[in-house]
Length: 319
Image (cartoon, rainbow, N blue to C red):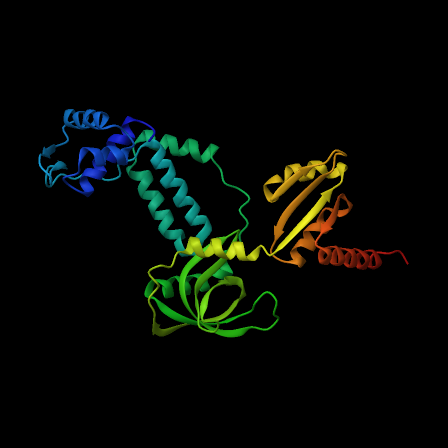
């Protein structure tokens, strides 16, 4: 934790949340020694915070019954985190939470002391998030609103959905568990009754959407983060090897975070290994580097890139 003020506020919150806490437990939660904890307790006592202790196996430190912390006690860093987080929610969720975010920010600005407001103003000028890929939310807002309601009320939905590999949509019934924004695309995760399995559906591919009267229970062991991790791992099905020519080696170095393996060669070239969702994706990415990249493996990717390159050359050939 950053400083004494942060620890004192956190200690107060811990004591307010649960009475009769042992010194060792409180110290562990604060990341300090028991000796330091007693020093912080003494500091709170000097500030007039009514804390008492009881001995015995069920004893510990407690706030005097009825004492409550004043609302919205933030350190400057906490105020910045809340303000920037609320601003991001307003931007990412569009109309769905725009008014709520605006109201929350107005209340913060109204009650925060001058120090916190100066810190927020500094952060807004110097701590920026830019370049977030996201679809225009106006078209998605009705679908987002219906799915949020379905998730909150745990109601099954009926929808038409078009997969990436299909031109026609098909009807599905889904128990929606969570909404996710991943790499700028909105998804709903839930149990698909057509496949009898958990699936994710991209919102811009959903056609008609209707809330049904059937009620479901979200499984107690469902975890959206784990589902996304499993799905991302399953997507990476094609392992490819490229050779960057010496003239393009700087491109390989600049994109090093994308590669699973990175091998510098004595002639100045670089061989990389990377995982791609499918061959079409890998071929498109290969061609984006033009003649600076040569596919070493797999052979199927080499064939697709060669055929595409010939077709492109013929398409642009001079008559």
